[in-house]
Image 1 (cartoon, rainbow, N blue to C red):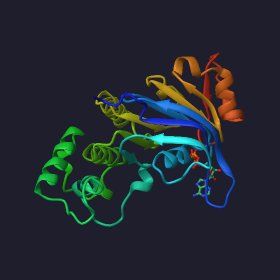
Image 2: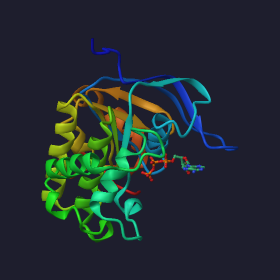
Image 3: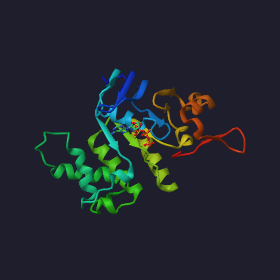
Length: 247
Ligand SMILES: Nc1ncnc2c1ncn2[C@@H]1O[C@H](COP(=O)(O)OP(=O)(O)OP(=O)(O)O)[C@@H](O)[C@H]1O
């Protein structure tokens, strides 16, 4: 029977970097299969740090964190630009590592599967193109294909929409929906508050958990103010708030 427990559970979690102070405190949340969670916060608010904790790169210094299942990451586009000549297919095949013993090299069946997942993100015809020559949006989709090949239960996106044009962003939103429909938990760090309205939950961070819950209930003026502080501006059109990104 399918394990009904949340894929990610944190209670009172605090995280910091080696030898440094805590950078994220009091994080309590539960993320179930099929949930899309937007992670909001100012620069330095702890979005990437939270993802690193979920990936097991940083151990909680206080509280508990349990992650059930495999994690796949889609890092920031600029950080995922590779300067050495690997093809899109090679990058997807990196998803095979971790599925088997370390000495096992990708075989013919793996290549077939990698091509199939590239097809799912509409990039089969780009399989042989050098990864670094693809557009930012295409690179993101290659990394989604890698997560699909890994059969990741939890997929973590770190600011995937930065510098992306509207059609690419819409396509990526569709892929995020698809990943969730398949029963994966999807966490997306973003600077776009509006984008998160379409998802199942938002986590607002500002060195600690400010709020967590369904966007409609959670994104109040008080919560946004506590999350973004003076980076929050009132629009002249009235009542609406926007966040000055990279403030
Ligand atoms: N490798 C590291 N070593 C020490 N401190 C770090 C490290 N990475 C991040 N920090 C610190 O942790 C805090 C949270 O940073 P983090 O990168 O998680 O924020 P973020 O919300 O992802 O920001 P951004 O929107 O700018 O990407 C910041 O104070 C940052 O300086």
